[in-house]
Image (cartoon, rainbow, N blue to C red; front, side, top):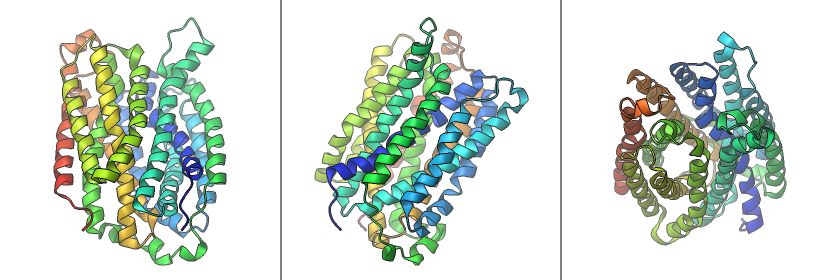
Length: 426
């Protein structure tokens, strides 16, 4: 297999931009957007939990399906269509939805998740196929995740920018800019798809598509000891990252009381992650992927432990925390998928990538589902309500700070302990 050029690696990564752009509104903004339309926090959490669970458990099937198709590029292009249309509908609910609002949310999430899941799994499996050695797998993963971070930054800044441009006298909010941003997403998705699908080699000659790889199911994938060890570490670390992602807007608004700065904080977080990617790629080559990932976990634990002690007016300290945790995020994004590609190469000699990434995405979505479906109702039970402001700081916002900061620290400590004891070369 010929080594990839820098242009090809960049072209492959371009599709990661709109895919990540889509993920931020769906996973972070949608609960607050629909709560603002009158849907209760508990109902939003329950709907997100049900939708994500239903979506997650079809991922291994979608992965096996993508292993059987002869042309992953066409497969990806087909499923980008429901993704784009579903995103537009998600943030354009009927004006008088009323009691139907929850059903609209369910239907839109189903369409978005189907398009996103099928396209993303095939896209990740394609990346594992085109890379020819361990370091190139890290480069491909870093390209995809780095451009994905650009998409996340756009998703965090574009909604407020669009509100400012269309209504200069109105205070810009993320929620107010989501409907026009979802329309911009359609154009960004189309442009990135053309670059990726046209300029990246397929990397999968028909004779290499062994039916034995694609017909194996979840049980065969989990039969690999290396896969099981990596999945357990990934799951614990993923839940630890998903909880702050779900609670970020609430923490900024009701603990820091700096809602207007939420977009800036998010942008700093993701820009730091993108800037740190080359450092983690270099570190992984010199000290190994496992040790580099351990260093990132330690940095994240220190950052979130500090965040627990913050309160109103601590914007500068939280800026530093966003930068530090963003640097750690860079490793979380680039290194685990590269380690998974290494596991696939050792277990399957470069086959069945879709099946492995299908299981990988199932675990990713279970992490997000648990974060939204368990933490949000637990906070509601503890008496927290969005928008409580100063009154929440003295009371129920303590539960919010505990969930946002200390629970992730505990989970990351467990993940780091398991990773430290694991040897993925065995």
